[in-house]
Amino acid sequence: MSTGTTIYVDAVCDLFHFGHVEFFARARALGDRLIVGLLSDADAATYKPQPILTHAERVAVVKGCRHVDLVLEEPAPLHCTRAFLDAIGAAFCCHGDDMPPEELAFWYADLIGSGRLRTVPYSAGISSRGIIARVVERAREGTLRPGSTL
Image (cartoon, rainbow, N blue to C red):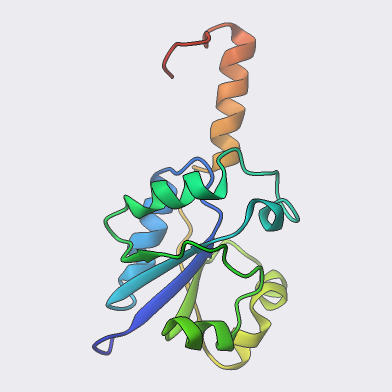
């Protein structure tokens, strides 16, 4: 690791959870500074369910993570490029290793060719969709009541 290396991650981070925290910690360990860009609600909805939290709410939550040095206020680009990394001063973009190579190539083709994409282990067992499923299940069981805590 060289001194002053900035790592960038793009993410959705809907319903922020420990898997996100672990991902940021692993990405941050690749360099000296971590910048996070969050996709817009509309861009996220092009490949996964519409986020429950708004972009502004997700930015506010991620700003509280101790592994993150900067959260971009404007939505992240849907496809990260070398030009974007250069514009924000980042050496690399980082993603979880849960994505097959062909998907990585779709989203990060410009970075792969230049060696500017890194992957870190994915935190299996936790996801925003999984949390939503648990909430729905508890609501169906009647164990989740309006105004109650999870």
